[in-house]
Amino acid sequence: MAQYGRMRAVEASEWRRMRASAVAGLVGGALLTAVAALIHVVVTDAQFAVINWVGAVAMLLVVAGLPALYLAERHWFGTLARVAFGTLAVGWVVTAASLALLAAGVDLAGLTFLVGWLVAMLGAFALGVLMLRSDGLTVPRLGAWLFVAALPVGLPASVAFTTYVLGQGDTPWNGPLVLFGLAWVVVCRALWSRRAGRAASGTVPQ
Image (cartoon, rainbow, N blue to C red; front, side, top):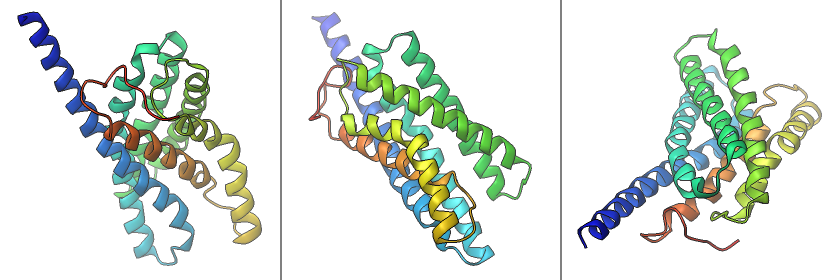
């Protein structure tokens, strides 16, 4: 009985951590989607500075949301999934830190931002593919599809929009970030609403 009680306490603690992480990821994903979608309407330097800081906060919240996805899906992770998740996580931490430095006026962080962004998007693509192939997936498959689509769909769509609609062809990374942010909204909303005791093995509607 004592061992069972300890197991239940560990499960409850893990569920609370996952739920708190999911809230951060949900808010961060929503903010990231909004910032990436609206940044092209920014017309002044002051507005750009504000939206950069909002974007940095959004990215850091998504960093805080990474444990929720790991805790929920680690039961089916093999070597490839661990590598893909690690690639996504490392790339995204670099991206978030770089944008915070850019917002603080460190222009040299622009290079690390682009490198981190590309690594994160490649990791998201690989993880999304593995999520779709897994029989043990517990989060909505829509989230996985959005991870997969972020780079190959979001990048050309962003280039086309900024080039042919806005006539400037800049910041092509925002298209992928819209889909990437939406993926976190879908995934973390499902995890946040999950009942206690289902942190590692529950299912949600697909």
